[in-house]
Image 1: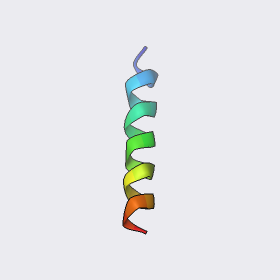
Image 2 (image 1 turned 90 degrees about the horizontal axis):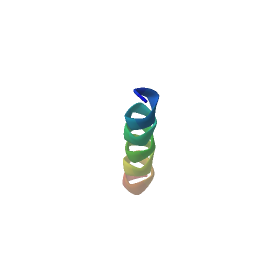
Image 3 (image 1 turned 90 degrees about the vertical axis):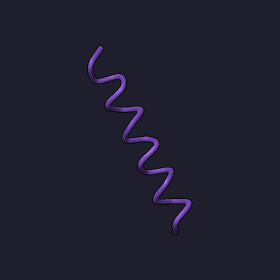
Image 4 (image 1 turned 135 degrees about the horizontal axis):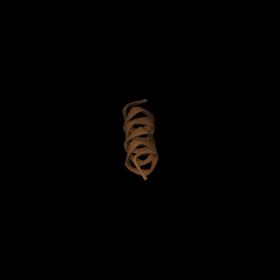
Length: 21
């Protein structure tokens, strides 16, 4: 269950990086 929010955070982070790039 702890890996779920972690994966979500990673996805949001990658999305943010894509938006910046």
